[in-house]
Length: 158
Image 1 (cartoon, rainbow, N blue to C red):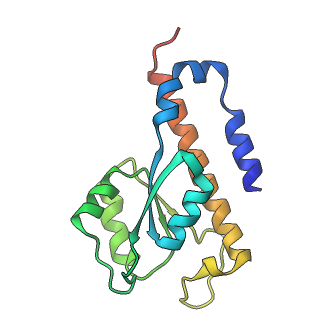
Image 2: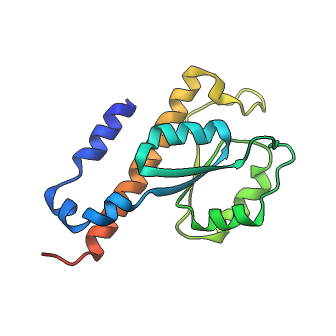
């Protein structure tokens, strides 16, 4: 399914868009922030060379005691996608970052998943991870296509 999504994504490239956006499309990577390291890993593998991703909760930190640094807040203000997963700090954090910037799209990777209890470790289940992977791929494709269309609109025509 994910492979088909990337095939579909690549099929939207035509000669005109490649000519108009050759330099911009090659250089632009989606700036993405994920909550935790496993999620950063998955986003990086799914997005490949189309994304630049960083995790908020880094090695040695705990989601239970996490507080964003000023540097992370600055990174979020420049990000295009933020993948949430349902960890505790999101409840207070999401409204703040949602109001920070207009270009940031917050994606809940629990989409389509029925949660059992309050355990957010859904990436540990292969079945549930497949659903998360689909949500991540769809968000990357949608944001990339939107960026391509925007570049096409603002590029001078030949």
